[in-house]
Length: 196
Image 1 (spheres, rainbow, N blue to C red):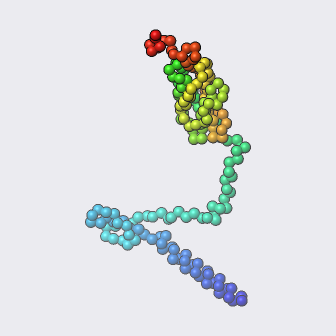
Image 2 (cartoon, helix red, strand yellow; image 1 turned 90 degrees about the vertical axis):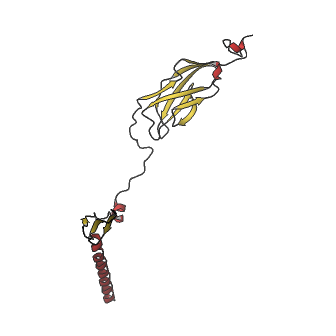
Image 3 (cartoon, helix red, strand yellow; image 1 turned 90 degrees about the horizontal axis):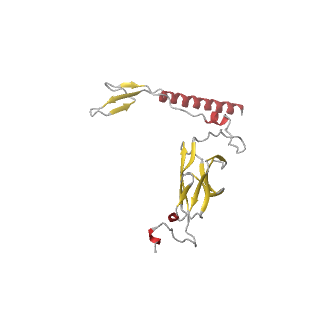
């Protein structure tokens, strides 16, 4: 049995050496470049008249065992502190302006436009609060639309949320005054269509 084991090892060693020697010429094989009669480049392993030898870098080889032996990066733990938040240089409501009046004809519809500098980072979103209550859910946007606001004074504010949903920055509040038709004054007294 000892003889069979030694013979088997000799055969395996010999086979491994033959494979190794067979691969060496392929790695060191020369490549030649020439140009044919039509001006097209031709690449070959045989030297041709007026051809030049090209140095070919050895192929990249990934050692699977070495890769698997390196420590794996652990997944991010939400409880661990993340990269420090850098505030945006500008987060503001630019329309409507502070103390603007929304006329009766708008029927309480208000377009809220934002200025955000720099642009929103991946994962960051903004949401709109009206009178302290969330009016619009967090979105990657620079404008919100509020439909059918009640008459009276309202305060608008925008909040910037990071990818985890935490509020990281707020805009200054903007106060607006919404005019709406009422039972006592169904039409705007200043409009020409309400004249008797």
